Image (tube, rainbow, N blue to C red):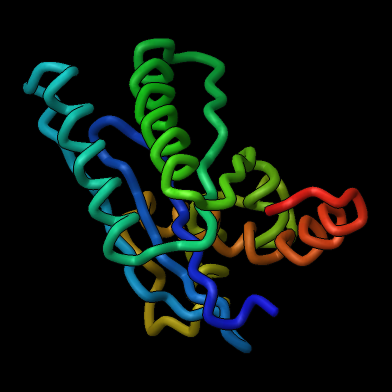
Length: 172
């Protein structure tokens, strides 16, 4: 049912925004992994414009069916949280406008789905992403691995989401 569908995972960040495009096959396949970067010395509007343009380019190039974005949750650093929230908002809005199924996941949901434990550390997530995607080495940087984990989390819950939608008569 999902074979051939592409999911774009986005780990939002103002300086480093991880992305991963995963294609659903019998075993998920990494199509593209990377990080969008902005210069911390540039003005905020310019950084957001650059990220907006880069996110749009990813949507146009890879034509994903769905976009999985990490839900913003910070306990300490308000300044970092604001930048991440702004980038997350850009991604949410553009993915929706593009017609994608847009889902947010908490870090705990992603870790539980990919590594089997919501308290997994970054290295464990990277290792499980490597194994699940059949990569020769763990994806680096960690932002790209986190984005791949988001896409894998989406693929894990997508069948249930579709069954619930069908039962409720809701269009995707």
